[in-house]
Image (cartoon, rainbow, N blue to C red; front, side, top):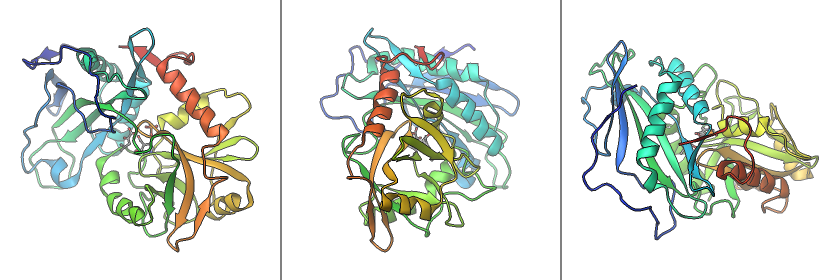
Length: 355
Ligand code: PLP
Ligand code: COI
């Protein structure tokens, strides 16, 4: 693929050393990648200064939400080089989301080339701060100026970068609280829950707002029959049994197939097994109460490994997991994942690629 470059005149010339603790997703770099689909093929690959996009007021995305996105990260290793973590899996998942949302797929190699080109150009933006990383946000949206509810004919694919800190304010150190409620659902069977599409997140805002009333960070969603645990708004869910088993709900068409969860399922962790199950809500609550479940948390690119210290129900009843603190298994999962990402633990073949 040929990429046309239009560079910002005053682009960064020194390594980015943030003076304040970086948060997730606020900061941008100088440039972004763009490419257009004209109804037949992807064309006009370009890197341009980061800035506003021009879009018709009648564009399909603005009315019917035909949009998909990804989130992946790069990390700096001790050799001073920048490495992407499993970007190929994100590129493949973008194409899975495209199928669900009737959008054109993009060859995985083209997506990877675009991510590498942008990250390479912006390498000075990699944040020199403990625990920080560069978050990449590739996304695609329908641009046809048309009010009929049908797939757009034209699309734009864009990638921008965000030098980022932890997703939750307290980072890994302070376990979060999740609300479990039958009032809101993220997805239903036959819907778009397995796609990473904007609408799944737009409709979750009401429930996040509700969760905040209970001083919970997010909702842990149940399936639409309120029987089984599904996932939280921005991460998959796991719990740890007293036998050192890490259990993630089965991926169904209402759950996003998390690359972090898949990584955990693939790893060989000494003395810890990771597997999937259908997890009944009542069984889960009983497990916390009777001590069969000793640790809980979430898996995600932005969230990393996020410990969950307690669950609250709408009645106000709270269930504290173990002693409410980070447990040894969660710590080990966190250390292993961050070790692989930052290069202090050898990564399985193909998991990290040098930019
Ligand atoms: N579930 C949802 C709804 C998410 O938004 C995310 C974040 O991407 C995840 C799970 C975790 O997926 P991954 O580990 O691929 O980032
Ligand atoms: C991610 O973890 O990459 C996400 O997309 C989660 C969220 C910020 C929507």
